[in-house]
View (cartoon, rainbow, N blue to C red):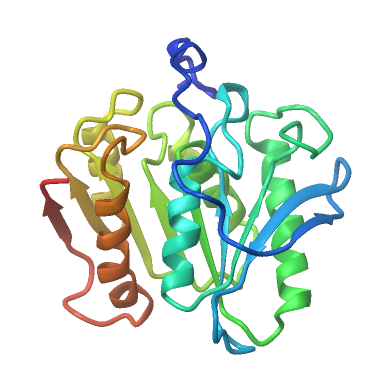
Length: 247
């Protein structure tokens, strides 16, 4: 089992290449972290109430251009804002203005734990939703095993097979997995098998025509999340299930 990505084409293809839209409005902050101050970007939707859930978002692989302004992470932030939730994005160590060096998910998990502690101090009455894309999904799972106050989890294209998911405990909160059927980085069927093999299976959205980076399908991703996420966090509907769309 590999403990890191081995996808040499990512940097050359500029696949983690920033935004397709202007950033969500909010604050740019520095939050204390284990390797120095972490660069943070928040966004608060209009009419947000004090105890609204807060979504913390984890970006893709630092060594291949992943950062908090990645376009998939941006779409997640915008969608959670649509749902009335403030969002907190941040750069892992060694990315942007966050000091330090890439640490194969170990130090990055400590970075996320520092952000979660800061969010809890700033929003003590709020539920916390945790989300991650690709490498960020792996880090989110690692952090979930070390805290007991996450209310819901969203994983986008989790890197099953590229990191040791078998060593992670099972998810015990309401959760959702979104996976592209034409993912060229991660095996879509490995992700599906892993997710459906969990004791508490997630709500699983299979976007049949989407690649790893959801090129040309970000709006479909946004629409699907707006429709399905409320069912996850409300623990309503028919429970864990697989949903297929042609996106």
